[in-house]
Image 1 (cartoon, rainbow, N blue to C red):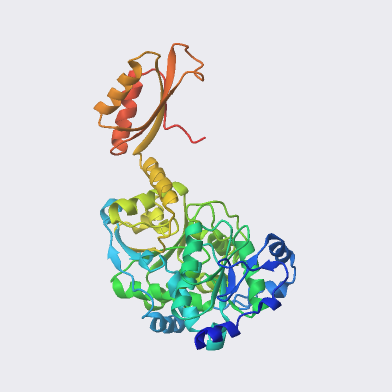
Image 2 (image 1 turned 90 degrees about the horizontal axis):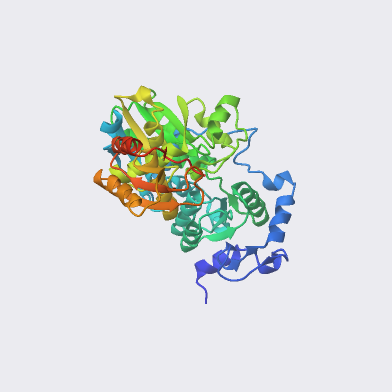
Length: 473
């Protein structure tokens, strides 16, 4: 016999007879509610994406014609509501302060249970739902952090949560959402398609659609991080905030400026996706080109209309950062802070690393490290790229005589300088200049950039032909 609570949940689920014929139901896969398993096959997804009915894809909480500006009172209310379910993350002084000539403090949102600040908004929006809507459930589209936060707090608050995740979503995040009890549907080539599917399903089954960076209750929840920053650190000159859809900077900036108007608010975006800066220039949210970036959590083509309306007059400066700077920032955080942070979370540090905030030298700066959900394979690549950007991982090609001792002599030269060889390969077939010479490609790790420059000088003095820091193919 099912428990009374379980019966209540089942009563609000769509019955199998009400489902379209092209949705099948093998157990253990994407579901609309806990007891009714659904998988959207490609045919059904394509039909949904062809649907041109604007009403089915309209989010009434995020109306471009009537954007809603959040208030400080909503943030204060959110802080009280979520205080027992969300971690008050530490905000501590960083060892990077001396390296970059600033008094740097890190707000460590990556220490939340699901690894990001998204829990604040997720819990707030769920707590604000009437009980009958929580019983029917909520639905969201996300490739990662928002899905995890909604899934986790939905489980804690006994609320049905469905997440539509694009096919590019990391497998580990998909699995963790299922572990947290969410109904997971993997559909859509990108987040835009997943969002359209989620909106159509929300209308079909009466669920509440929750935009992860623009729902008013999401903005209020994210703003609680700003309240904590002002409480935790005195005499702040500036707060640096990563920007994707704009929910975090909107809420945090509103909280901070309401309490301390003199504090500068600086937003940071990857140079491969700068939707908020484009919106600021255009005066309204517009579609921006999105390219692959290490800060994938910030890759949003159109920023939130409510977030933009709330934040546009509160932001003092927007900067963009390169992929190289993001990789180096991740490396700095691992080495100096013992903190594993994703690309989006490291964007604020990247702005400091890239010297984009020179005006803050000698000032007290708080940087929000907003997330730590990075795949281990991506982390490895980021660390290697960070080492290369820092001049500590170098690659070169040199021509040496085609003799038994030539490579040994080259290896000895490198070893005598205290440099570690990571990879070495020699080739004969593609050398065009001298049939009696071979090309040797070497990747090695140096102590610092100065040692790398010493190695380059020694190699140029010893060999006639040297190609230093080979470009990527």
